[in-house]
Image 1 (tube, helix red, strand yellow):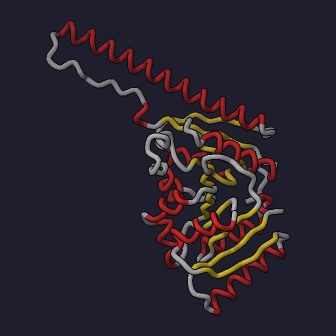
Image 2 (tube, one colour):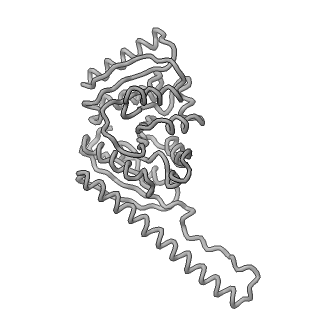
Image 3 (cartoon, helix red, strand yellow):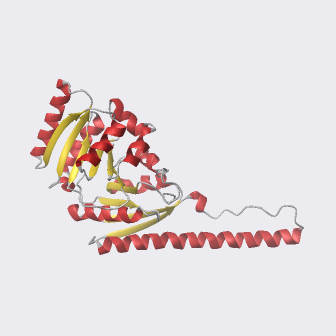
Length: 287
């Protein structure tokens, strides 16, 4: 994952979370030296769609109205395109001000998952805001595209919190599954985690296998030069993880996207959104 050709992909939508996405992308770029590509997707519903709303008007009036509607749709599509480019320009300015040396932008129309398939092959990580443009109008609503992106992507997904704050302490939810092991391997190899305090936690009973697995994981991270500790905690993942983050001052949560036991249900079930919503720091989901 540390190949020179990789880049950091930041998905922005003009919501209040877009600035945080850019700030976190700049933070990652500063640690890895990798370029940032900012992507904005115009959804299909935003495309110009001329509809026949003329009803039973006479032929001449109907034709005139249809032309007027077509002109309005074309103007609307043009304005939406201008807005998309403005969103990208603002994001570029934020990143360049933060010191990112190489920033590219990409404006696409269609489905965001289709766009992700185009850009993620060269991505180290994909960043997205926790909520979309409707966040201020529906505080309890998580971004509708988030779960689709997590399911579709083969890269780590960095879910940005509402505002950036310095990241020093990282909590890693570990259940021994394949995705959790990939998360540990990614952390061990990534320049992003060098110099950070990493705490690996397993939720549930402290069985011998669990304790041995945590010891091996901690040893792997320490061998990579990372300050790492581990512990077994009680509780349900969807509530316990957010509580640990809040009570112990963690700045980021890392989880495998698929795993064993209850943590598996977190990511592929309905409690995913509840857990991410309740966690006030960035969440990194690893496949």
